[in-house]
Each structure stands twice: as C-alpha cells, then as structure tokens.
Image (cartoon, rainbow, N blue to C red; front, top):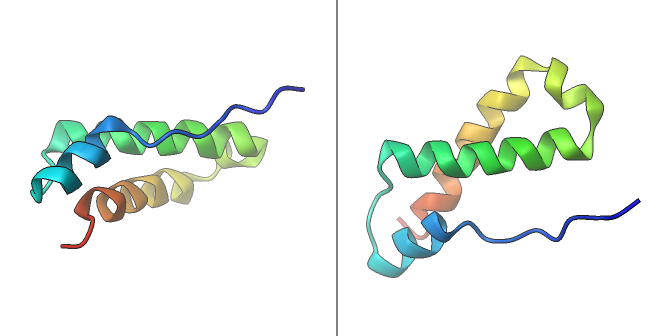
Length: 67
C-alpha cells in the first residue's frame, strides 16, 4: 500500500503570502483537497455528512492564515 505525500495547496500559499482573504473558488478547492485526504484516510468519512462540513471549516481556517 502506498501513502500519498501531503502537500500544501497553492491557494493557501497565495492567500497567506498576499495577506488576503480567500475567494469562494479558493475555499472550495482547498476544501475539496481536504475532503479527498479525509476520505482517503478512512472509508467511514464518505458516509459522515459532518466530515464535509469539517473540511470546509478546515479550509477556511487554513486559508485565513494569521487573520
């Protein structure tokens, strides 16, 4: 079994580097990546509707940086 190496989404780097809030497309993109990481880590995540909401909250926090 191979383990995928985690990467920092470029949207996070851009938002933090420019000190700005993310737009909705950036937030969705990061949330989608977090969601894929969650689903890849556990088969139960795809059945839990709260997991998707948590991925959006995590994306918002990651993109906010120090704001």
